[in-house]
Every structure is written in structure tokens, then in C-alpha cells.
Length: 90
Image 1 (tube, rainbow, N blue to C red):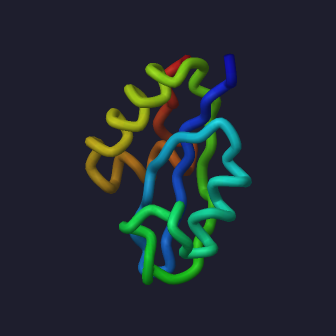
Image 2 (image 1 turned 30 degrees about the horizontal axis):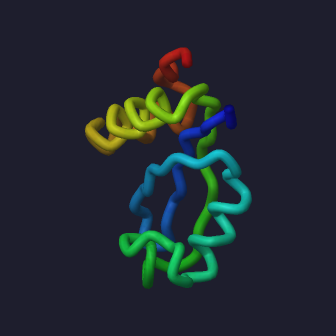
Image 3 (image 1 turned 120 degrees about the vertical axis):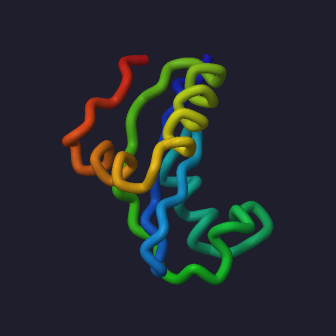
């Protein structure tokens, strides 16, 4: 069983993109390339910066944490990224 991670990218326009992967560096490369495996949201949003990554354990837990993060208001997402708001334990 692969270990899953939740990651957050800061796009060139300042927006935050949250995703999951078993290999965050590979996924970042896929997003940066703008190719067919890049998320549509990411296309045309300028350079990327990985601002947060955390282990999530299983795929189902990673999906739950991704949804939790995506549903947070922007100020709370920024608090998680900066470490001011604790990340849920896997």
C-alpha cells in the first residue's frame, strides 16, 4: 500500500490548489508541464510553488483531508499552510 499525501500549491495568480498524490514531486512536475496530466484549474495560472505537503496515510483518508481543506475559507487555508492552524492527524 502506497503512502498518500495532501499538498497545496500557490499559483502565480495567488490562488491555492489542493490535491493528493503518492509522489508529490512527480505531481508537481506534471502540473508545471501543463500537459494532459495537469489539472485544468492549474493551466494558465502562472508559476507554481509547493507551499504545503502532509502525509495522509490511505487514499481514502487523503481524499477526506483534501475535501476538508478545499472547503475551508481562504484565510483558514492560509493558516494551515503557515502552520497557525493544526493539520488533522492521519
